[in-house]
Structures are given as structure tokens and as C-alpha cells.
Length: 459
Image (cartoon, rainbow, N blue to C red; front, side, top):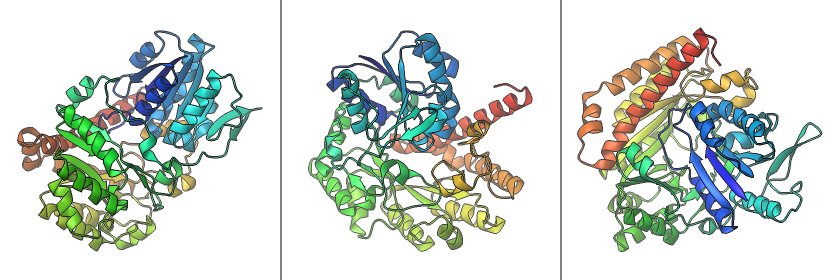
């Protein structure tokens, strides 16, 4: 069976990272004897990407639909594929596909693999290869008599060590290294979250239980990164410290085996209880920590259902800076209940607590409280507004828009940040400063293109 997996074109402002989920599916397909190909089109125009997709026939095409602002492109792929090769089965997975399967099923997709995909994808292929029925497959969504059928969810994978160990020998990392200008890998060490933040759909995708790889498995992946002579490794978890003991143990193992590579991760503000954990992180090579502060206002933190206080944020930022770990704080503005003073309070707090920070505008993402309340949900033309600070739920749209751009301009014109982005001697630090400029460039570019589409009534 010839299978093509696709990371789609997306008009997003995020950095270019390895499509880890698709890589897992690629390796699973190979284990079953399938002829696998993977195309990362995330930085390719839709037109050029489509040419590559249609260059030859496949039995099955699987497309990742994680981001809502990728959905308009993803929704068009299946029709084009079916027109060229009517016998091809087209499936999708990812966050948006899981939470809004009807968007794709009513646009020529045959199946959606919802939620955590590896086990469902493996059984899906086994059934196809064995010519067995698919209708009762856990985690599968499909159309029947014009109605969306959502099969019962598949149980989360308890043993994350059972996921394929990726040594990257089957993938070309050159384009990613060239783009980043350093040898940079992203690694997944955990899934799931124990919290239920109002603006986040993580638990809808990965489950409400925190699961993690064992320290020895994590160190195996670091060992592969060291063999590849990587300059930086980022642990793309929602909160690596939700199991502080596991974090401490893999830090100890990195130190013991002398596998010291600069690495970064995301931490919750109150996840680390033992101050010596920060010491272990620093000694094992931790160079950067993302802290999702979200707001400097207790009232807004309560609305977001955040499990920490402003004081927790301050304590964690201080502990990281004390160990010379670069702090990257993240804030969110634009809550319907947020006052302008509270918005400014968050900006000034971010400026005071971290050298790198960024602000997102609160978006009504599918699966969140705000999606349910959003009056424009179901309007596909609105999907392109996501990820570029263009959706304002607050009635203070003009002031929020101007504040967002004003503080962004001040951030990027800061001489210290410009110097660090260009000349900092540490490759990992230089990359983390520089990527913020790329985010800004993509945001401005896509907003200008969106304005042109609106002015000239382009699709």
C-alpha cells in the first residue's frame, strides 16, 4: 500500500518544527510493510504544495489538520485529490480535525482519526490490509447517510515508551537545520494535562491524565540528538514538570551520562515545588523555559481557570533567572471582561519579569469555552483570522489592536534583543531571540496578504 502523509500549508506565525506525530505514523506504516512518504508543506504555498501531492497516485493520503488557520487549505485538498485520483482514500487527524470533524467530512474526506492517533492509525492500516470493516474502529469518524458518526474514543496510550523510537535516519533533517540556522530538534516527552484552562483544548486532544516517557527513554532521544551534533533540543510538552519526579530523574540521568545539550521546555508556574529541581535543570543543560503566565491579574487568571497565582509566576521566574536559564513568558490579552488597565498590567509584568516574552490575543479555538460562545463559529472565512492577532472577543477591539501592535513594535526595536538575535555567542540563545522576529515577520506578512485578499475580493 502506497501512503502519503502531509503536514499542510498553513498561514501561521509559528516556527518550523519537525512533524513528530506524522513521523510516528510514518514509522508505524513502515513496520506494517507499507510504502510510506511524508511531505512537510507547512512553508510551501498551497498551489506548489498541491502540485507535489498530485505528482503521483497513492492508495491512502493522510493529512494533519492541527491549526484552525490551516483548515481552509486542508478542506480543499481532498476534493483535488479525489478529482485527480478517484480511488484514493483520504483521511485526516490533528486538533482541528478531532474537534471539528464535520469541517472535513463534508469536504470529501473519507475518515477522521480523532485524538491520539498512533494506535488508531495502526489498527486502521491493519484492517485495510486485511480487508476488514472499519465501521467499529475506536477513534474513527465518518459519514453515514449524510450524518457524522463518531465512534467511541480510543483509550490513551499509557506507555509512551511504546511509541516508535525515531533515530531520524528515515527523514531529511537538512531543510529544518538550514531554516533554523542551528541543528535543532523538538522532542515529545509527555502528553495530557491535569488542568482545564478555559482557552485551551489540550485535554480534548490528549486526555485529562498526564503521561510521560521514562527517564531512560528520554535520555535515549537526547543521545540520538547528541549523535546528530544538535545545538538545541526543545521538549514540546504542555508542562514537563507536571511530574516533578520524572523531570528530576531524567535531569540526573543526563548529568550522569554526560549528555549535555542545551535544551528548553515549558513549565507551569507552580509545578516545581522543590527549588533544587531548578538546579538539576540548569546542570543538565536547560537553557530556556517557557512560562505561560497568561495574565498579571488575579481576576483574569480565575476566569481562565489557571491553577496558579501571580506570586507563583514571580517566584518561578526569579528561580529560573537565578540559575541563568532564559525565561520566555507568555501572556494573553483580549478577554471580554478585561479592562484596559488590566491589559497594560499584563504587558508591564511581562516586561519586568523576562527578557523574552510574547502576547497572544485570546482566540475562540475549537473545543474551548470561548468557541462555544463565539457568534461566528461555523463561518469558514473566519478561520484565516486565527493565529495572527486578528480576532478580538472584547468590545475594546481598537484599543487592544493598537496596544498589541505598539508593544510589539517596542519589543522588536529593543537594541538588546536585536543584538542577542544576531550576535549572542550561544547558538540556542541566539535562536530563541531570533525566532521572535520570524514570528513577527510571518504575522505582518499574512496580515498584509489578508488585507489584499479582502480589498481585491480574492479567495
